[in-house]
Image (tube, rainbow, N blue to C red):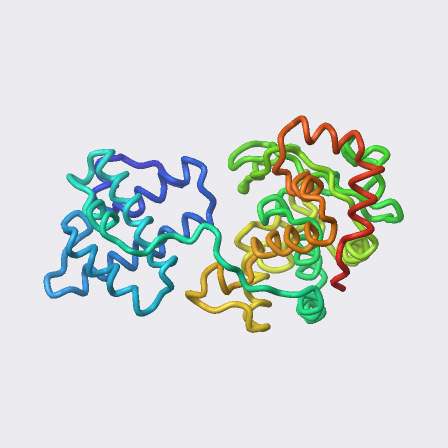
Length: 345
């Protein structure tokens, strides 16, 4: 990112200025792209009006007109999300002194739409998901999807996995000499750290994605996932990073660490082909990497009846609970997981 003189850049390109700042604050490239898409569309809307104006000249009526224009095209939750992006943009630019007011404040007070933080998601059965996975033949794409489905981890956490984070007992490709100490004595398992954040250096490489779990977690690898990972490792390009990323690109930037945007693209492409993704569908309809986390949580919790183990595997629990499950990992976590995890290949 280039250096800037704040006053000049803020006035010449307020959106670019705002996007730079949220990046500096640690927002992901995907979040930045969402904001840019919404803000640029609003900027175009203002330019197409009877009296073309810039972002700094928009009134609350201009903002209301834009929000109203979205209602025939987007779900209520999406309308509310777009409005919240505009509101945050104007609030920030007002706070740093570039704009004199936030025209979205009144609009937000009067809006009926709200962001659905717990949408009623599409319900997909295990046999339906098995059919979805069967259509994915590329070793990288198959490994990405199956890993997400079998572990419930986030896209950024998957991207941050290094070869040292997996232990495959029968593999000659997984580099057992470099495995983490946390995996000693735990064959067929993977370690998800809580440490990586955007811009931090982990295992000698600066990371562009964050792990959002509260606690580090060791997750069992069943035979199905082990087979898929072994098939991927057999054709995995030599990584460009000395950190040895587990998942690397097989197109474009050959051998570079996979990014969350790449993971989202992989999932979206296959979901579209399967009729599980449509523009404007939102979380209630679209299958995304985060949907796989929901699928994992729902189906494994229903099968085990043990919310504690599911929360442990998701990395959502407090340290005392983590300590309990860590101590009983082999007898409890692995046993329950291997007995109850669904088969999707």
